[in-house]
Length: 359
Image (tube, rainbow, N blue to C red; front, top):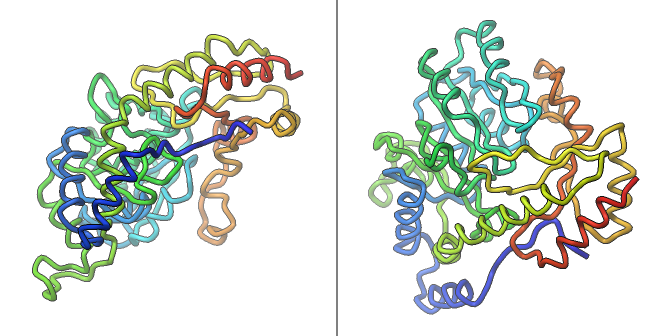
């Protein structure tokens, strides 16, 4: 079976974990601080704050901005539900926007239209979906024109860049995930990045029960601290990230050059894409047959995502708009096939052969 994802964990990570265990200091400490510093340097921000997951990183990012309960946040209708949940956890109101057909990212033209009907919007939360960076020139023009705060959801985009600048460094604040299927992992974990010292200070309080000094609680916070064990994995994974991303990109370009099936639309080639997923679109309602065919051929796949966020059952009664022209088409077409750095040349050739043989 060729899996849709495979964490790239080796001897270096094992040795780093053992070193922490032998130290006896397993909880948040100097190893976490080292990881934070190295991650900030990699992304190109002044501050990084490690958390327990990508979801808590996004929640902390939002809560660090000083927004008021009920404030509206523009965001994409098409992403993993954590994007919208974090807005709701933070006492804010998501306002959903359609996506671009080629990149699956938030559509700037739709942003303008939605903003005209919601001029009390306070912030924009973008998602660099599947490792593809949003058009940051247009995003920054939009937030500057309307004086909005900008949050980047980089959960799937470690190392992705726009015009040579890494995602996670454009917004007022950003959030990353280190779930095992991501481009790099800590087993589970997240990171908040920012260039704003006040945002960073509030984020540090929020993840640590509101404490600067032990047992003196300045605000109501949470226990969202990363452990030294997780951070030790992250430090090694960060060293490997560029190489792992290069392999993902090479694998993706192999597919783009060799998949010739007329039933399948391959992703748009875009500079800065790090291919967390290689997501194709199926023509003529053939997706169900295609996924069954992949199962028969022992090729892993994913459907990310079968529903838009606002139509999820858990949001029933919240009066969200449920119709999104592009997202409603895309959600019925998309299939992701393996692109992770653990694939061999034989794996890639087999996937291409099978995909091209599908009718």
